[in-house]
Length: 88
Image 1 (cartoon, rainbow, N blue to C red):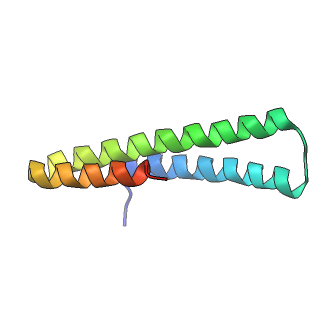
Image 2: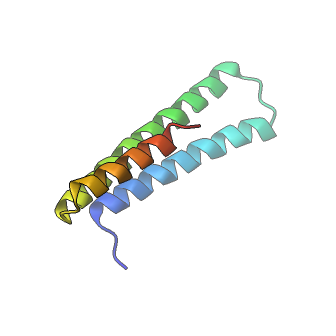
Image 3: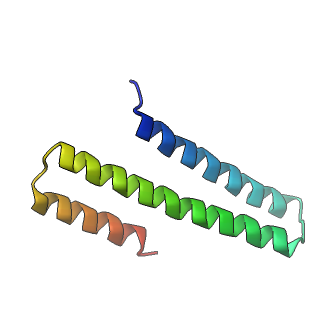
């Protein structure tokens, strides 16, 4: 299965997020007490997750338009996705 350019970019975003989370994990394991570093790592991971979510939803909506899904179905799906993303 071949990935599209957009899928590849989404995977790269996920890989960067995983790297940021690993860095946070390492600061916990090594018991580093550098508060500034911890805050910067958390902020970077948070921002990366937001950007990934935006890119993922954008790709989904574009795909729906290309596949000419009924607007009602797409609207329900997007509302579900947004609700799930922000309900934690």
